[in-house]
Length: 83
Length: 199
Image 1 (cartoon, rainbow over the protein chains, first blue to last red):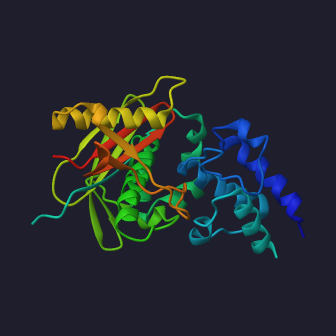
Image 2: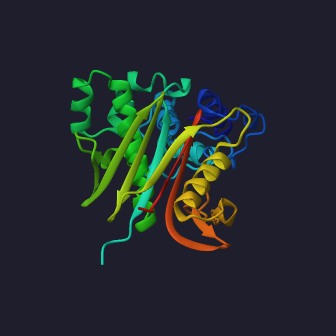
Image 3: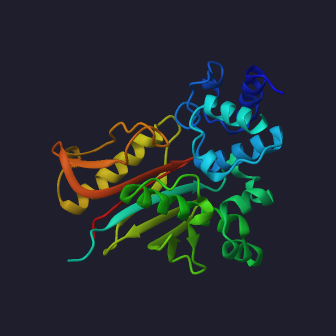
C-alpha cells in the first residue's frame, strides 16, 4: 500500500520530463494544475497518463483520465486504483 | 439558412523534443488512434508526421465539439480522421478538415457548417508569450478582412470552472462587444495558429 506522500512524490517525478515550466515544479502542491500551472500540453498529457500506468501498474480509463486536472487529482486516482 | 460556421484548430511543433519519442510508443498510438488510423500509420512513408496530423485534427475537432455540446473528455480515439485527411468524425458528427504541414509545423483546422475559414500560423519569437502572439495574429488577419483597425478587436476568455484549463473558448470582441465570429487559437513549441469563421 502506498501512502499519499509516496504517490505524490512519484507523480511529481514522472511529470518532470513533460513540464514546460520547470520552475513551477519547485512549488508544486496537490492543488497545482497540470495543464495551467505546469503547462503540460494535451499531447504530453497522453504520455503522462501512460507513465502513471507504467509506474503504478494501473490502467487509467479515458473517463478517469479526463478528471485529472491537478496533481492531487492524479494522486487520488492512483490511490483509488491501487486500493 | 446555412448553418453558422464554427472552427477549431491545433498546431503541433514536429521538432518539440517532448513529443519526439511518442510515436515510438505503441501504447501512445493505441490510446490516440482508431483502427483505421493505425492501419494508415503502418503504411505511411512518414508515420511521425501522419501521427501528429491525426493528433492535431482530433484536437481541432474536440474544440468544436466542446463548443456545441458537453466536452467529450479524454477521448482521442473516438475522433476518427478519414484517410484522405478531409474530415473528422465524432459520434455521428462529420466535421470538415484542412491540414497544412510546413516548416516543422502541423496546423489542423476543423470546421462545422458552411464556409471557408480564415486561417494562419507562424513562428513565435523567443521571450514572446505564445498566447498573446496567437491573439495578435488573429486580430490582424480579421481586421484586414473586415477593413477595420486591429486595435478595435480583442480576444477574451471568460472563466469556466471545470473545463480543461478553467476558461471558456476564446471570443472575438469588436469595440468591446462580441463580434459573432467564432474563433480558435492554438500554440505549441515554436508555433502559434488561429482560425476565424469568416469566409
